[in-house]
Length: 256
Image (cartoon, rainbow, N blue to C red; front, side, top):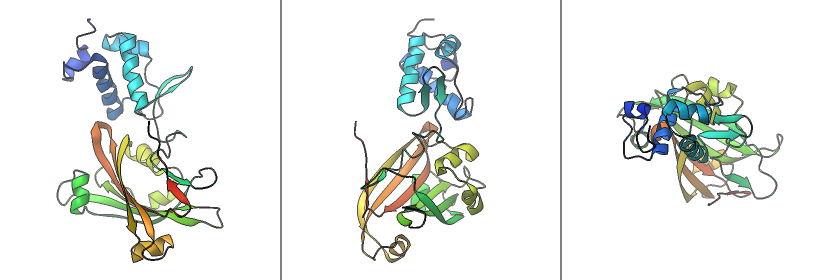
């Protein structure tokens, strides 16, 4: 077939004919990821196999995969192939958490769960997560702590809001039993993978309740980080509001 036309599979799925061909292939691959055709951590077919499947050149497939790898949807492994990205990967486990100690190497933060409850989503939460009025949400509250085991200090107070339908069965007991990254739990047990996130950051003063939980004086300066995380199809699946105590940490980002 001509490289300027749409592959049969793309036409069957109503891919816009004006999209570049590699973008059409990317759309088909993302649809496969979203539907569970290839699960996190699994290898996808080779570029040669995909080119034959869709009736396009290997270069077209490679361009689609390159873009997906740049977006952390796929991971290339030299000599092994291309795999669906997973939050179990060391380099992606904490890619949304940018809190870094002022001194020393970054270390994994300990977590202390405070609450997990299912309730009617507040209006603002429902709006951001595109939930219907009165629809259920799950709220998780936790502390993240830094330091040695005998001298842990809270540095983040997190409030997470999740769509109730997608996270049916998420309980305090289930969270307490889980030992890995939270996003890995969402991916492994609820088939929800966080693809990208948007954040808003501002300085705030600690209110009395938050100050007590973080062990700081009321009115102490904190960094408020509101994150909206998305899965496939640009669907919002987590609203996270964190208060960061930055006396010995800072928020680090890389701009490319």
